[in-house]
Amino acid sequence: MTEAIVFLTAYVLTWQALIIAFVLGVILEHGGHRKSAVFAGLVVMAISYFYYSVSLKTIWYCVVGYVAIGLLWSFWRYKLYVARMVETLSQRLWKSQEEKEAAVKKLLPSNNLERITSWIIVWPFSLIEHTLGDIITMIQTLVTKFFKGVYHKIFVSQTAALLAREESAEPKA
Image 1 (cartoon, rainbow, N blue to C red):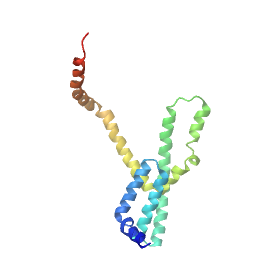
Image 2: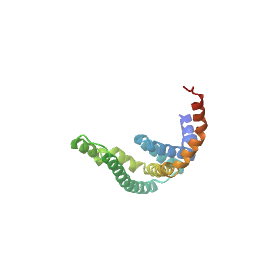
Image 3: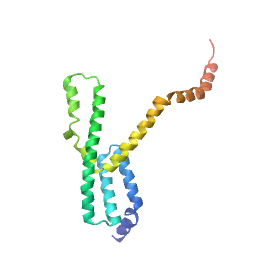
Image 4: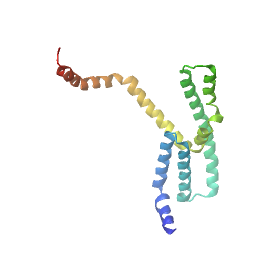
């Protein structure tokens, strides 16, 4: 029992463990592992409570503020999620109106409670993941739209000799 307490205080209740749990939460949220991200969020809160010795009154105020921010964040994320899904669904060819209506009903808040709840509970992870996702998307857009020609020229110049050798190595008929 003593070893477990020593392990807990020496390795788990440290600022390094707090950072690791936080980063892990962001990664889990990005991967869509919402239940694991929520667990990581709870670990972050527990480590913060024990490591920083915060009073219960302060924790209560923080929880109220945290949930309020989480609610606002979940409204924003749900709006973006539905807009993205509507755009995706509008590009599909539907076999029937019923199939289309069934797909739209999957977007109802009642069918997305786990997603919405996790956005409220782990909003810091979701916020960071969403922000980094936007940056990654912006970089991908730069590569595919603005620098496509540059990358294509590099490709052609680097592969031209290889393709020329293959053509000359083929026997002529």
